[in-house]
Length: 260
Ligand code: GLP
Image (cartoon, rainbow, N blue to C red):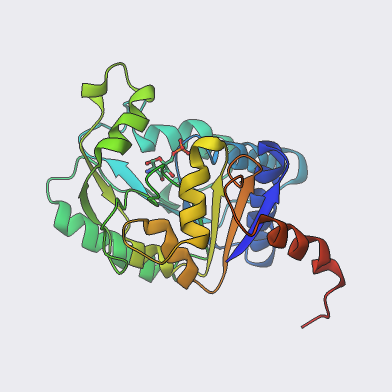
C-alpha cells in the first residue's frame, strides 16, 4: 500500500484525479469504479475541470459504482444514482449506456447482484477503483465482519453508518437500513485501487486500515492484500499514523529512485 499524505483536501483530490487521467490517457476505454460520499467530490470536480479545460475524454469509458441504498428511487436526492448524475456524469461526455450503478429497487436482489458481477467481468474488469472509507473502516458498504472475499450482495448497514449518513437526510429514520454493495473480493479484483480520506474523523479508521492487522472488522484493511493500492490522505486523516514520517520520506525520495 502506498500512502500519500497531502497538505490539503484539494491537493489530495488533484492527486487522485491525476491518476485517473493517466489511466484514461493510456487506455481511453478504461473501466472505472466509482464511489459516492463527500470525500470523492473533489476528485469529480477536478475530473470535470480536466474534461472541460483539457479535453479529458470519457466517451469510451465504462463505470461501475460501488453501492446503492435499497429502497430509494433513482430520483431521490440521496440515492447514489442521483449523486453520480448531479456531481459527475451530467458534466462529462460519458455514454449513458456505459454507466452501471447497483439497483436499489430491483425485484430480485440476488439475480441483480449476480448480473452486476457478470457485467464487470464482461467489460474486462475494473481498471481503477475509487474508494472512500467509513468511520467504522468500511469500504463501499462492507460493514465490519464482511467476508474479505465477499461479492456484490445485499447488506444491512451498521448503526454507526446510519448515524454518519443521517446528516444527509431530514431525519435519522429516513436513512435506509439496507444497501446493495460490491463485495471486498469484488473490489480487490480491480487492477488499481485509490482510496481517499480526509479530516480528523477518519484518522482512526485510516490508522487501522494502514497499520493494523488485516481483519474483516476493518474491511479497508484488505487493501493491504492488493498489489497496487494508493491511499491519498490529508494531514488530519494521517494524524494517528505511527509511520507517517516514513510515508512522507518515501514520497520525497521517489523521484531519485532507480528506474525499474
Ligand atoms: C458511505 C459509502 C462509502 C463511503 C462512506 C464515507 O458509507 N457507502 O463508499 O466511503 O460513506 O463517506 P464520506 O466520504 O461522506 O465520509
